[in-house]
Structures are given as structure tokens and as C-alpha cells.
Amino acid sequence: MSMSETTPKRYHTVHVVIHWLMALLVFMMLGVGKFAMPSISPQDPQKVMVLQSHTYIGAAITILLIARLILRFTTKSPAPADAGNAFLNFVGKAVHVLFYILLIGMAISGLGMYQLANLPGVFSGAQAYPANFFDYLPRNGHGLLSWVLLVLVLLHVGAALYHQFVRKDNLIARMWFGKS
Image (cartoon, rainbow, N blue to C red; front, side, top):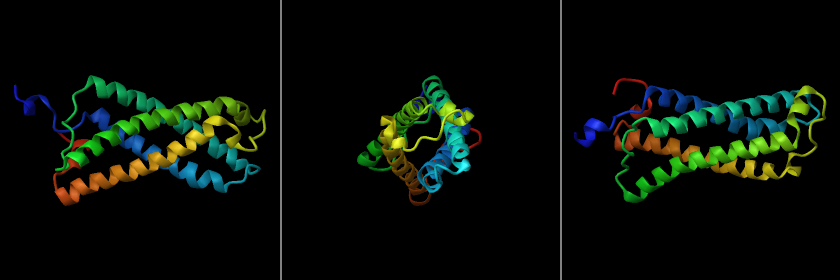
């Protein structure tokens, strides 16, 4: 069997669904965490609701990440994209690995804040909203990782557009719905 017969041309449909759902949720979370949350006063009752949503969506992303990692090791994937340049090919592979590392780091630091700030107590109204999340060590890592994640998302989108419109190799079709 040749490589083209055993290597699929596109990702498994479940992988595609998880990819786009995670992309949507991560994009929302970055917007909420970077721009919406800081603009809401801690005394505003909406702040708890927004933080609660941020927490639950973060948990959903973590579950999807676990499913995606399982799929990554149990289903066949297309060969890595060729950007026409060894350095860009390396960057492409590195960005994908870094996505997994960063999302795992975001989950761990988010869970750390959840525990240290006693967010279940905050969400139930039994405890006041924390005066400053920076009092909790995981907050610094969570914030830093979110900025790195934002840069990686922009690189990833830029690379996809480069492949689609400059290289015209229809790379996006690999992570879209359709037949192999």
C-alpha cells in the first residue's frame, strides 16, 4: 500500500467538529477573559455570572481537548501540511504542539484558580467575589498563557489563509466537512 492509500486526505468528521467547536469556544473565552471581564466591576452582579460562564466553558474546552487528544492517537490523520519551506513546516508543527500544551496549561491554571478562590462558594453566593485574582498564583500563568494562545491563534489563522489564498492548496478542506 502506498502512503496516499493509507494516509487520509482530511481529518475524521468527529475531529473536524471538535476542532471548530473548540475554535469557537477558545475565541469566545479569549474575548471574555481579555476584554469583557476586566471591564466589569467586581461589585457588579454580572461579574459572577460572566466568570461562571467562563469557568464552565473552560471545563467544556478541557473535555473537548481530552477527546481531541484521544482522537489524535486513535485515528489516522492527513500528513502534515507542506508550506514549501522547511522552517515554516517546523513552525506549523510546533504551533500545533504548543496549542495542546497551552490548552492543558490553561486548564490546569484555571482549575487552580477555581480551587484557590473557592469559586463554587462565589457562584453559590456563600462567598464574596475575590478582591484580586492576582492574589492567586495560577492567575499569572493563566493570563500569560492566554496571551501566548492569542498569538498562536492569529498565527494559525494566518497560516490557514496563506495556504488557502497564496499557496492555493485548499488546506482548509482537510479540516472541513466532506468526503475523503
